[in-house]
Image (tube, rainbow, N blue to C red; front, side, top):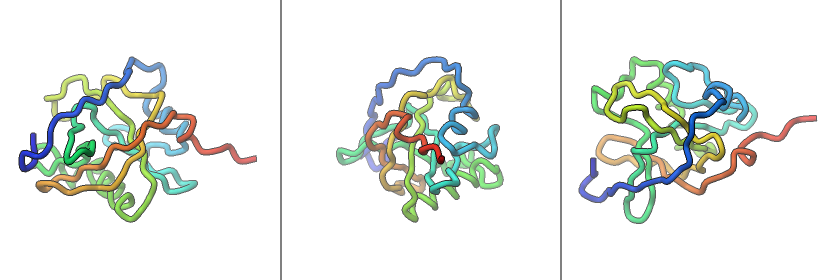
Length: 159
């Protein structure tokens, strides 16, 4: 839905395919295990505080030449602060606002109209660097930056 008529749809073309890697294993590979695999939408890597957020491919939009992806839904049918996953998302965004590095994991929904959504597939080959958090019309959006091969987002192994 356009915000003040300024947002337009942006297609983030990805090669998404059914992955043999589970999301739980994917986040663990990044060094940021998901604490709540049923309701969680991201995690924090303990070694450096980097935040990893799952985002929806169909929620990427353009505003003033920037690609933004919606990361909160303050519609009462979409976001529930009593839900541990939604509370966790707000905590993750606060860390990003405070300057934590952030990576975005692009996901595709089985059904974009379902509530809650189910991840059909996700991009296990690359993540996106995130820019700043932008608040528009009571929702939070995050700038979608450069694609990064997953190997660059994996922390180096310690000797």
